[in-house]
Length: 256
Image 1: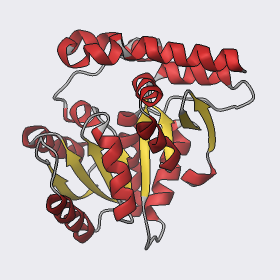
Image 2: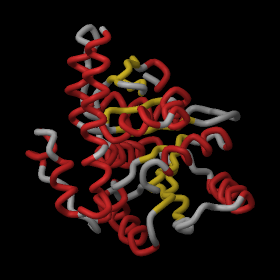
Image 3: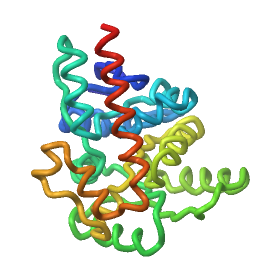
Image 4: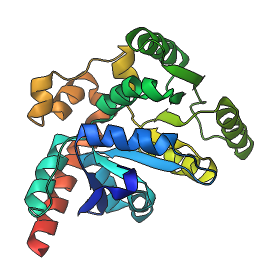
């Protein structure tokens, strides 16, 4: 199983890859370990907010078309997919943090090489410690905290050179939405790597931020937990994004 063999189905302006976590993990590892001397793969994990952004920004929406896979990061995406596409089986949540854990774990069997790009030095140090303690033998070949400003062309070229020289096969990108999605596409165009935009996975695995309890995740209320923890940073995401997402799903359903 590879990323290009996964079923795709649209929710709003986003073409989602429909599968479960095990299939996604297998596909990512197979793709990352394949011999590739050309471009790489952009793997995105999108939720209701990403669908809302795509409905408001045509350029952002094209990221899903050019990505090798766009997985269902949020439970509401799964609910919407099942309602909009009753003929498509296999809608399941493929959560970025869970996928990162699974690939780090199972990738050890094939000596998969990983590069961490994003967050701050403190979080990256905690993340590196957590990974090496939880999955002994995992191959971390690079760790980089980019500056909190738009990089220059020269800085991007130097970043690409560091990643290339490291021999990385998977580049985990934690820069926040939408920057990480744009960077994943850029990396995939520039290097033969599999770039995965996993956002808060860095903080959750490192233990620097609390993750929503499983019961809230299953019920689709993870957003409420995160909003309570970080109201200032996430207010627009949920108060604007959630209604916009619902509007997109209703529009699509009525158009069927």
